[in-house]
Length: 250
Image (tube, rainbow, N blue to C red):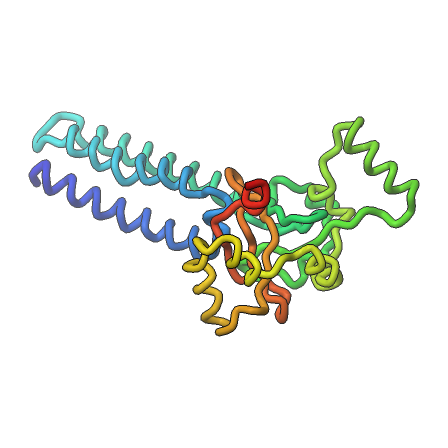
């Protein structure tokens, strides 16, 4: 076997494995717009660099027919490549979106590791789709003493903000009216920001007029986006790559 052939075989196998992992990540772990919200491409770039570029390149560099210890060298390369793949997939899996939480006037997407799962009401997880985060809403306690206690714990005791506290969560279906009272019409957005028309056209395939779409801010890992919701189904339908607060300030 020639060096070039060994490289091509290694690259082909690596490409097949990485492509399969990539499809699982896009379809199951980070479906739809969640891939962009979580900026998952950064971790994937490292994964691709190690497993699709570095591994086959080492084979190209080390392979020489009849070289003593060649099998050992290639075994070390394969082990390192597998370890890098497993570690990368573990990081990506643990950081996958698990909850989409509405708090005050915005949505925030949380990974399972961001939340104390022992405090999550099992009823909230009963309707979870296999590849979609759970939609919930935060609400401060009605009792004033309890409200003051939550504020004190957050400001002075180092406890997490309310969106990270499952004991303050409500099912999304019970709070849609409150959530949609904070939303703004997409039609209004187009009058002020025509540049997003192309992105909005994707949602108009669902409803020709587009009048039923509204938007709210959603916090990404690196940026803030607009989450578009259908006012009839009450569910999210997509993302607009625009910071609504920056737009408001300008």
